[in-house]
Image 1 (cartoon, one colour):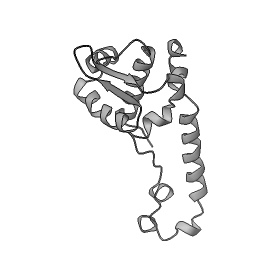
Image 2 (cartoon, rainbow, N blue to C red):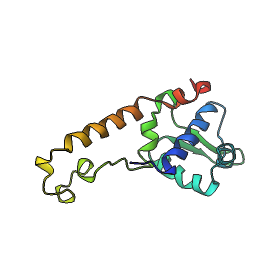
Image 3 (cartoon, one colour):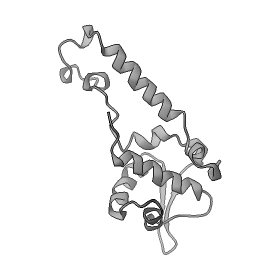
Image 4 (cartoon, helix red, strand yellow):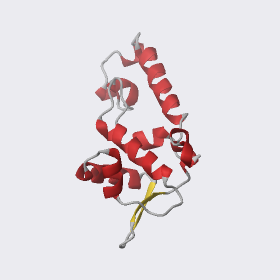
Length: 137
């Protein structure tokens, strides 16, 4: 399993916003320049993060984006999940038995994939934006 740049850049952008938490909205152009991320790519990441309730947009000349909650209240898992599908094997994460092989209920390795998925989720949920950005703590 390998995360794409969507997850990586999404976390970097959110940490950049966490570093400026409470200082007003930040433009995507500023974040893109600071993080070395294409502005058009960053614009694609903002939609899912807004829909997840992690970002708020502010219109106007001094507008931009800001976190919807304190950095300590947003986990890395909350940032990554709207941007990435974290699926090791399809049958572990799909409730649809038709998606899985016929051995789903008797699979000898299923427990391995379930535990690995749970460990990844726990690791992502154990860190907050404040943990990644000491200035935001």
